[in-house]
Amino acid sequence: FTASFPNSDFCDRSIGRTTSQRLIFGKDRISSSRLYSSSKSTSMLTLITPDKVTLEIKDPVDKIALSQVQSILSEIRPNNSPSIDPSALLTVAKRLGDVPADHEGTYTISKEECKAAFEALGETERNALVNIHNRVKVFAEAQRASVQDVEVDIPGGKAGHTVSPCKAAGCYAPGGRYPLPSSVIMTAVTARAAGCEKVILSSPRPAPITMAAAHIANVDIFLCVGGAQGIFSMAYGIPSSTAGIEVPSCDVIVGPGNKWVTAAKSMVNGHCGIDMLAGPSEVLVICDDTANAKVVAADLIAQAEHDVVARAILLSTDAATIDAINAELDAQLSSLPEPNQSTAREAMKQSFAVLCKDINEAVSLSDDIAPEHLEIQTRNAMEVGSRCANYGGLFVGTDAAE
Image (cartoon, rainbow, N blue to C red; front, side, top):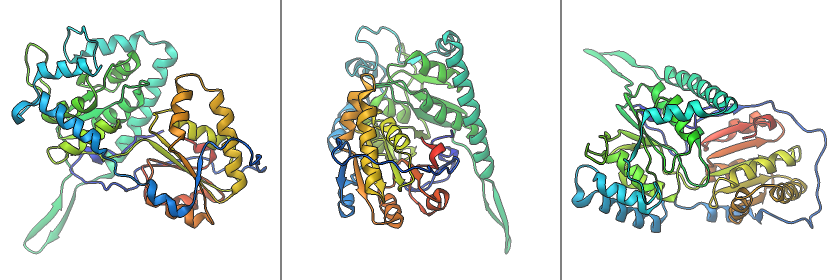
């Protein structure tokens, strides 16, 4: 387990869209038995040919969503005012369901509320948050230590660069179908490791586990608004008023989100920094005939149940393995509870599989797609993974399954 992006996102250093950002290593275990299933089994993944993959590479910014968030910005930042109007923000937050319609409080959650939420958790949940926090912190601090100041002698003087943290970091954690405390920790803890003075979190309808994660991650300000309005609030700041406390404008905004979050990020990019314009959440698995169909199917489902617009992509050199994984998908989906099952089945409608002629073709297609999560379950998995260039997170070997 590691941070979802390097803490250089919180420093004065740019990262390209397709830069490899993390490696998660697992035991490269090869199954001794091949898994087959009947070709008559239900095919959950649409089988497409390699030449059709480019049609699946879409603009991450949805044009309709962009138009909608432009209207939201006009409403909460009237006349291009320097900051967000607090009263207008609460009005939009109530209308869009970030807070209850009868909400009479402010747009923030206090540190005391977050602490109480953490203390109210069961021991298992508290320990899980503590362990995740510690792991992310160790890795994030190691990343920060790897980025050093540089100085060299030049004729007549010296030249160099310094690495300095942003003053205020904005962290977004989705709060739609399921709470995502992991997003809180992976963004806020990384910002702290980078040395940011202020860490602001935005998450709508925060569940107790999300508030508890904010406590352990030492978030300074917790905005209980989300979507585009949450992104805009962190980008432009909110003045102090009777409606709530002052929220500083952030130097950088990071974290996953839906199409409205992505559209809002595209609008504030330049006013502040952003991590990237990511499309829907996705996982791509490169596998051959040695892959464990049960494990691959479980990981495809794990991503699909995130959101109805998530994508699960399978690139394999073996037709029988694709059949076996499809059979497992059908069986495992049927055992999922609701709403996970319905969400995953809907996501499968835009998911697909490709039968590749060899691993080289699979690697090439994967680089074209540049997936958020990339898994390698093949012979010589580490060697195959090292040949992949464009991805968000790399999971190598069966035991490193996402």
